[in-house]
Amino acid sequence: MATLMALFYTFLWRILLMVVHLNRSLVSYFRVRGRSWKSRLWERAVSVLLLPVALIGLSDQRRLSDKPDTNGSPAHGTRTKCRRTPWLCDTRSLEKLPVHIGLLVAEEEPSYTDIAKLVVWCMAVGISYVSVYDHHGFLQKNNSRVLEEIVRKQEELLGGEGSKYSVEFLSSNKPQNVLSCRSTVKVLSPEDGKQSIVEAAQQICRSVENRERSSKDISVSVLDILLRESKNIPDPDLVVKFGLVNSTLGFLPWHIRLTEFISLPSHRDVLYEEFLGALQQYSACQQRLGQ
Amino acid sequence: MSWIKEGELNLVERITSNILKAGPMPKHVAFIMDGNRRFAQKKNMERQEGHMQGFNKLAETLRWCKHLNIPEVTVYAFSIENFKRTKDEVDGLMELARQKFERLLDERENLEKHGVCIRVLGDLNMLPLDLQQRIAEAVVATRNHNKCFLNVCFAYTSRYEITNAVREMACGVEQGLIKASDVSEMLLDECLYSNNSPHPDLLIRTSGEVRLSDFLLWQTSHSCLVFQSVLWPEYSFWNLCEAIVQYQLNHMSIQKARDLHREHQALQQLEVDQACVAEILQHHGNGKPTDAQRRHEALQRYTACREERVRDFLDALKHKRDSYFSDLCSQSVTA
Image (tube, rainbow over all chains, first blue to last red; front, side, top):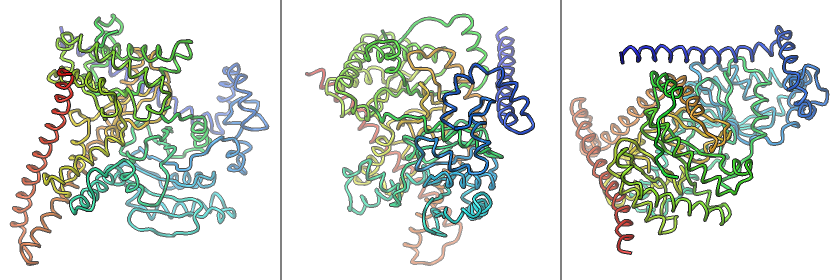
């Protein structure tokens, strides 16, 4: 009897998980489809159904774009206008922008062009530091390919304006292409996470071993300075995580103390609206810093 | 309100919990119980009342966890940063803690019946002495229970915890128990306040904030993070179930990432050991090349030695931590 019940519950659990999976994929499917040109009709139908909600949201929408779309979806309203000069109007609508953004790819295979696209968007919007991470370390292994793609995308997306947005690439092994620094891009791997804390600890212990330092002098700020690698890059304010896994997957544990985490379903074919949505969500976050 | 809430789940809850238990369940869940003050504001209550209700919710959540076969729970009760709050509020929270830990000692028998072991993670030296003593008494009284574990992070931040672990290792180096080259991820892990627990499988933060706020940064690097918008005093059984479903959805991919990390960690340790052995051989062999067989033997010898050093160091650390609590206890008895 008990085993029968167990089997029954297992069966129900499988159904539950299937339903949740289905729900999740349907939501992400319609999210992408709903924004593509083909399914305008569908979008219209939904916006009619959601008209009361849209009316409430109208006042917010005014703030986002001065020419509100009749469809009533705020993201939609900004898009038509922003196709040509996206970066200029969008940054104005954001109250605050992260200084340091982390792009966390929590998917099995990173797509270099999509990552490059995201990095260029970050630069164009005016974010000073961009870190790119995946937990397999693929991106760091193919560091040069990432940087090449970024340069290519930069020309493609920003065209003549591109020259204004010069980049500095930082890599833990070899500093390269240091141009004038408007934006700094860093490619990270799990080794920059716990391993770097362990290395800092080793360094401290070695100086204790050589009697250059006493264990009493060790404080949070001593460790923090070591982990900043004297480059004075601030901790990331925002991490945008791509993929369905809800985990940081080893992304810089020391540095994400106050980092806001925002998830997007995938970095493949990611839309500018989605990226902007994440920035808007970040802009609405408030921090109390323990108070 | 007491620490342990008795009572069974109702029928629907019981069926749901049985369904969930058919899947992989988290062994250790961590909570950031955020939203007590916003709750109080919403309900026009005193702030202290909000914190009180937050504690009651904790007792209720522990009951749910027990029924869901989750043996270990860690909660963020008070951050070092919280000392920055108004004196009134800090005093209020300390008073609440005083009452609750006193209450805990009254409930000793009940805790024993359920086998609840209570640990407090954080730098207790920052707290008033009488509270330190009460906490120590509670910790010592429940030390040997082993059915469920409740870790209360008090005067805690994760950076402070990591720094403290580095300090402990540096102390070990000073005393000659370990070498600087013995410092590894696994050793640092063992020096954290949380060394007696497995890393949390699931971290839940309520009230819609999407950051970790310096909580278990090291331990949650491969945990499932779930941010829920409900305020902590309004947390329900169904919210907990939702978080567990999230964990179950993520379980496979996180497990894979964990395995990958563990492999990497073992490789790292091997490399360090090999480097140390190479240095020793170089030193003794006057630069003459050594054959593979000898190198292999030397490596095995070295690894065994290192493991023994680390073990002795960790025993000493455990002893130091245990006696800290026992000393506080005996102080309060004589006082």
